[in-house]
Structures are given as C-alpha cells and as structure tokens.
Length: 339
Ligand code: DAH
Image 1 (cartoon, rainbow, N blue to C red):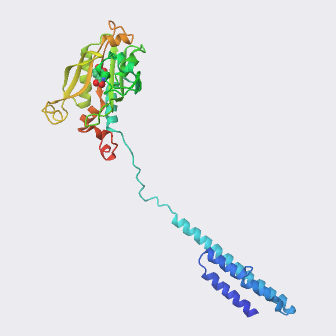
Image 2: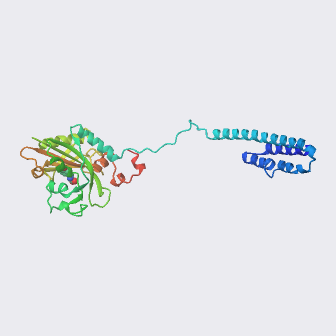
Image 3: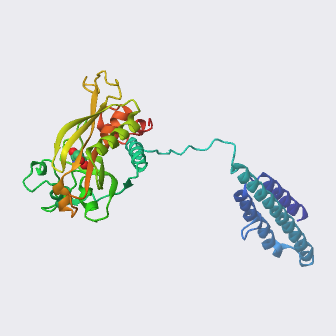
C-alpha cells in the first residue's frame, strides 16, 4: 500500500509539473483528488485493509492528499502570477509611439473670404447682422420696389413656399427689415445664403451666398458709395486695384451701378479670367431708392443712403483663381485643404 501511494504521489507530481495552464492543472486535481479520482478509489479500497492497519493507511492517504493539494495550490499561485505578469507586459502602452493623426477640418474658402470682407467693413464701423433665408415676398421684393408684376419675381428665378413666402433670392431682403426698426443711422453688412431656381454649372448654383451692405444717414452721397467700395476693393485685392463704376439698373437703387475691378490675374492686360477685357465685375450697388426709404418709414428728404450686394462665391473664385464654382460645394477635402 505504501508503494502504491508513493506511486500515486509521484504520478501526481509529474502531472502537476507537466500541466500547462490553470485548466490543465484543474484536470489534474479532478483526476487525483476528485470524487472519482485515483486517491478516492484508494480510500474506497480501505475495506480490504486489515482493521488494525487502517489508521496507518488512512494517515498515509491523508498525507498523500495533503502533499498533492499543497503542490497544486503552489503551482496555481505561480501560474496566476505568471499570467498576470504576461498580461501586464502585453498591455504596456508605449508612450513614445507616434500618435494616430486625427483629421482636422479647416475653414472653407468662402468663409475665409467672408471673414476678410467682414473685417474690412467692421474696420469702417459696420455691424454684421443676419436675416432669414425663408423670407416674406414682401421683404424680398415688394419693400425693395419690386411690385407684384415685376419680371424679377418670375417663377423661373424664385423658389416659392407659398404666395407670400419665398426662399430669398437676394440678401437685399435684410434692408427693409433693418430700416423699419427705425434706428438711425444704419451701417450694416449682412452676409448669408440666397436661392434661385438656376441649373448648376460652373458659375451658377440654386444656393449661393451674398453679402449685403446698407448705409443710411443724413447727407450720404454717391461719393461716399464710391469711396467706400474703392477702399473695399483695394483692401480685398490689393492697393493697385482700380475700380470702375458702370451704370446699371436695380429697382431698389437710383442711380445704380455695377462695380468692376482690374483683373486680379492679368492686372488689366486681358486674360481668360476677364475674357480679355482687363476687368471683372464684383458687385451691384446704388443710392437707396426714395420709394424704398419711404416704404420702410424713412423720410428721403432727411435721410439718404447707399447699398451694395456682393456675390461671395464670385469674389472667392477670383481671389483664389478657381474657375468652377461647383468645386466650392463638393466638400472634397483634397480641394478644400489647399486654402
Ligand atoms: N441684390 C442684387 C442681386 O442679387 C445685388 C444688389 C445690387 C444689391 C444693388 C444691392 C444693390 O444692395 O444696391 O443682384
């Protein structure tokens, strides 16, 4: 019996040493110490042992069990420690590795230009205000001296929500909203989105941006308009930029003009950008029509003013020498990253 128990112990020690991992170790425990284990079956054979030998044999079995149990417990602790060690090693963070670069967006060329324009006018004492994109027909047309039967209201140009409400076709709609508040004098710049029922091409989009300017005060003349817009053009395109006022017609200004600047690309010599004329048109402007002032409750005998409207995309395309407006709307970061 002694030899048999020694053999069981030796087998158990060998099996414990050979076991790789906690799972295998547990199998060894079950094999030797479990209910149907090797050592238990020895105990079950006690009935064949002579009664006087039983205490001694029992003690031997217990010693063997204890020895195996202790070894299993020790081994288990070592394995757990080793496993933890390995886990810590695997999970070490190498702080010297280069970080993942996050993709960082940046300002759209339209916004870069807009902020530049805003800064120029803020420097001249203007306040930046905004108006609604979904607008009453009244502010978009009527209050700007564009009566119901005016061709500018043609359905081909305008997105109608209903009879009285449209997607504004111009930021000029902000003019009457500001004037009827009755706070004078007025010196505002109003940038924003405008909409027209246009097909998309290199120079048109159903949704685009304008920057509106409005000045109302006593004694404002066309000279103020000219001086202001010349200063604006020079700040935006450079001191050597020349400005030309071409007579034009807008229902809400009288007289009206369009402003051309020397082509930024060829400096006036003529190139494909300016269609060989040496000039490019950048805005519409004029002296606020007396009807417009009157409709908003301002006495044209006391107050005068000027207004202008700049196409934001237009001046951005010029500034960056981009020849297709669609590039501004595609959100292709390969394009946008260049600015
Ligand atoms: N709203 C005009 C347009 O969309 C541009 C414009 C012209 C605005 C003359 C003005 C102005 O304020 O005085 O074509």
